[in-house]
Amino acid sequence: MSGTLDDCRHERHVASRKILVDPSGVELCRCKVCGCDLRRMPAMRRWFRSGMMG
Ligand SMILES: [Zn+2]
Image (cartoon, rainbow, N blue to C red; front, side, top):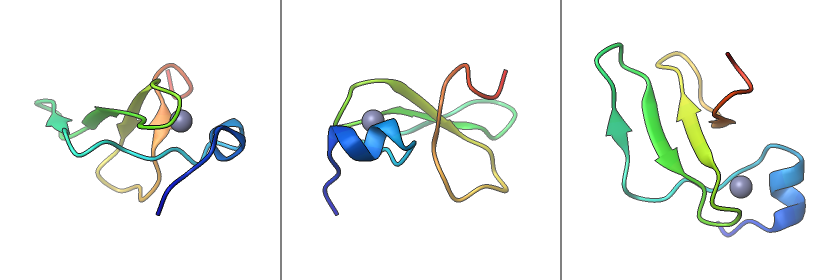
């Protein structure tokens, strides 16, 4: 699946393959399309931009 900047504007980012997991289990990576920092909670299936969820 390849996203577009329009997808990014609708918060549908494309996670890069390089994913870090912090001690609390939150996954961190970068969007391949817009380059923003993304994070994902263990219970979530979607990526969110860092900052959107506090
Ligand atoms: Zn993006």
